Length: 257
Image (cartoon, helix red, strand yellow):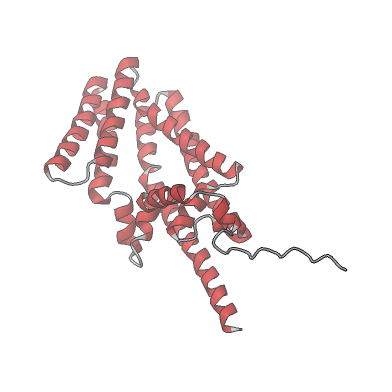
């Protein structure tokens, strides 16, 4: 008499997880989704069809642009005219303080202003400590190097940061890692951001070592928001195109059934 085979236990759909779901915990996923929504890419994505207004909001609005650009510009102008490092540093710090106080009084978000104030003060202290006006821009070199290195590492480990942000913005989580097209696109987008930060260093460092404060300050401003904004817009347009293409393919597949 044949021995009966043991019954096969039914598969539980609740316990089965897709490869994408197994790669990251729900709690971490929620955190990443919040980070993505608060990023510049998230601010641009929330603007809907009005890309111009959304971009302005993503980079801080007119007020944010002024707070980001004017302190550095005044530092260069005052130092060029007076050759006085204390005066140049004092004017830049003073403006950053006024901008922060104005936001507090107006009860508007102060996070960006405080971050800018800390950066201006730290840069001024460094320059005054060394007695070299060009050292006012050293902090920016470290920031750009840090971003470039972090993004490059994210590509090397197979988690390009632009893909992580885009995935959670588009409700895709980390499923994009199993889509060859999306993974390739997000890798190249992340490398484009690396290129932007590296380009800043490549152009500005020679002026720093030459002690050319005016050229260093002006190139820093020119390669700041004017370079950041188009890269941000390009990133969002490519991300949106990739997901729209995917939705179109799914609709075509559904209609053909």
